[in-house]
Image 1 (cartoon, rainbow, N blue to C red):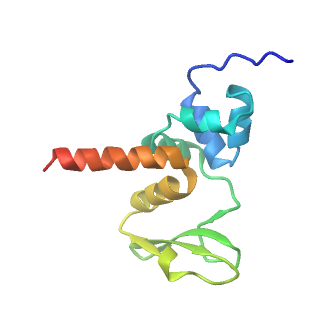
Image 2 (image 1 turned 135 degrees about the horizontal axis):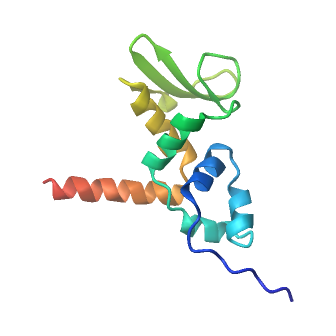
Length: 138
């Protein structure tokens, strides 16, 4: 039987962000969690602020996220005047429930990154933190 490699305690935020934006979580699991995606899911430490900062510095690879109307399936973040719209498109159809409007590009980008790029385990923790912060303000 092969001995498993020791698992480092911390995965650098930069590597987490790059893996999320590029759809390469399996590479992090291979490098830091002996290939076990379940272990990786427990070890994400990236915040939405970290991911926004990474995207503003490095951009988002072309492919799934589009910034102008097209005929391709995928996610769209489109500016029209002073409004930014986010929606999904599949087979030329845009489900009404996928449409969101924002007053700033930062708000639209945060929505996209939080809901489409952040790991589910981190989204839950972020949502719980937001609820706790709102409760403290009551």
